[in-house]
Image 1 (cartoon, helix red, strand yellow):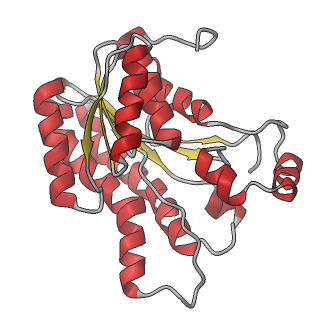
Image 2 (spheres, rainbow, N blue to C red; image 1 turned 60 degrees about the vertical axis):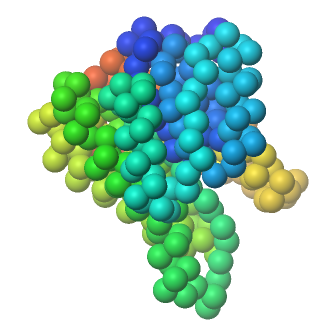
Length: 255
């Protein structure tokens, strides 16, 4: 990462990341740790998360704090956040990353499935903000980054419930940016394009899909998790101190 920016304001900053054990989330945890931040994160994959912590420590960066937690269980999730803040200090950066983009048809969606998909892709973001905002207010401000998705712009098939949740992220972000702005708390969203995580490569990256992606993008390169992590760094750092209520699309010019 030596060819990319360093942010002095992130050193020793307490940062919380949801879904930090793999994919985009793991890259976000790594990048904040490399900046010297005090990172706490949750994930349901304990093995991958612990391995990530070992990897970061071996690279000479502050080891992140990890707690196994399902973000759909709001009481347990809020307790995990509070517990980590007691040890790391008030979180002044929150990265609401956790999500899951399982495919589904219109016919197979039940009310229970709908509620579960909203819980894993939208609801936890709101309740993490609710939990962390009081500490940010006392600290004099903070930065919250919520994750949307390019999929509802590109109308990806068989993904309507996920797309509904990710479209709602934009409205929630803008509404709370107004509510929390007087306390110097900034809220922005990131809309990633098709990011080449292991899951995406294994499940959906075919030669035909890649050819279509390259045709659609202005920049003819595949995007990877660090491309998103670096945007999160900037939004959390003081360099973006007057940026709020905005959505940043990182998709190689696909939209």
